[in-house]
Image (cartoon, rainbow, N blue to C red; front, side):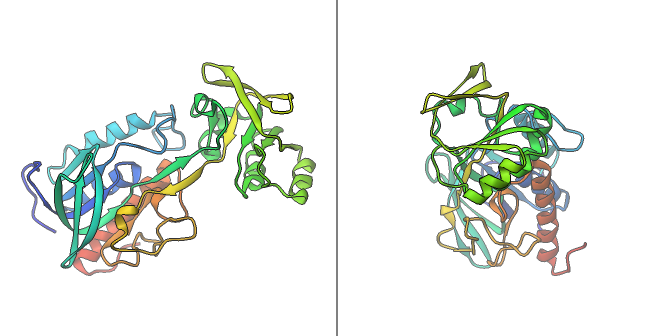
Length: 317
């Protein structure tokens, strides 16, 4: 790694590590890389997957913190490390091989600079797509959530909905059933629950409504009722929605690391992809979306691996 610098400026174009993404995984990696005397550039598009979430849960010492506040605190801590630079509202438009490392074209709306790095950590997250249910966004992040481990505690014992059009919706229903005895699955017209799955769910007290949803009803973000196209309505006190996720990795087309069937980067469990010098952590890496604390841990782990790989020694366990 290079020796510590005094303070990085916009003129720097050569780094030890380029971190793509400024969420928990990327910022945690940057912190640990900075402490290891690496010169680091974090490029963050500032479009987090959890932008609609008011409170994040399950992060030790930060339970209930707003996600944006967690990011603010992390960036504030990074400011103490002169070799770590964060560029906000900035994207990577292309990443390519350059000698033993990489070159990246970065900017806001278009390429404004090209930087080089010996290693690249991909922590860019995913793009979230919700079912096309009328006015669903008006409740998302307030009384409708996507992560049971993150938000089910606050909804325990209530009448809950689970809205989804994915084949794993029955499995999600079984999970959410841990927190409530009143759960209704809404498939919005999608044929994603088999007859046998519906029987199993019914035996567990979980109802399935297959009709398309006409609208969600409630006040100030609090979901109170789900109206169906057949004119019926189901009273609820909140619930969950099953998003679909799409990777934002088109800038890797020239490198072509291996992906799983869902488009997530495959790694060896320590963050290494099958492209030498290219690492991944957080939502971008298989198996996909993670709790914040899990993503932060993955970022710290990847940072340690990058440092050890750079000097040719085995990673500490």
